[in-house]
Amino acid sequence: MTAKSRGGARTNGRPGTSLDGRDIPAVFPGGLMSQTQIYLLDTYRGEITTRILSSGKEGARPWIALEDNIFHPQGGGQPSDRGWIGTIPVVAQRLPTIADLVLVTAADDTAQTALAHLTEGTTVTATIDLPQRLANAALHTAGHLINATAGRRGLTYAGCNHFPGQARVEFQPSGPVDSAAIQRDIESAIRDLIADDRPVHASASGDGPRTLVIDGLCEDSCAGTHVARLGLLSDFQIRSVKVKGDRVRVGYDVAHAGLVA
Ligand SMILES: [Zn+2]
Image (tube, protein in one colour):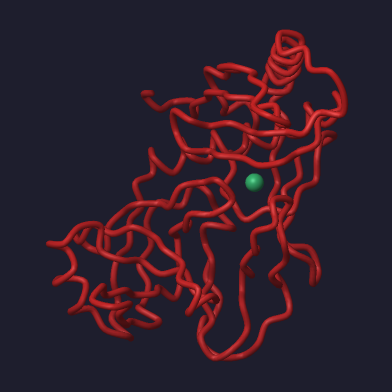
């Protein structure tokens, strides 16, 4: 599963820029401190035993970076993963000053002291809150479906938010907006796609950025986490279609099959 993490430049999975303009991290960034981004390879990997690649502080807050990282950091509208290092509650984070690494920081003040004792080279077991991860992956994947189906109806992507309870994709319309028709059309099209149970692939190809492919529907540059197949999306619904200024806001809800909402 894991590649050698330290040293040696790699040529695959180079960073790129996503549809919404955020940087896409490399799966295997080169340089002196290479971190394998397991979360980009396997949405369903909830636990790993690995070594601490690096540790430090940002102000008073300690952080560590894992050699084999399973934590998704907030970006592209998707929230950060939460989880544990051993029993220490943590949350993923990126810092502009350490752009190549996904860090984990203490989830609360009490955990800061425990995390500060962990040093480079120590072997730890990292666990993510897998139900939260899968809920976020379902919301994020459905965002791709909304973007692809709306694009076929004259709407141009303008932004997104995949947080639970407030998930939405925003568009710039090319003409008059019929909110009811948009809601009906998009919801119907996506229900059909889910029923088709199409596979969802995410991979880096050659030297290009990571690409999300849903067969016959879309190919998007993306650094989020996705469900394995569209049939794993459940309880999908368009919550609302609203016009706000020059934007159309498509709100939606979805869950990952097998999880209690
Ligand atoms: Zn994505």
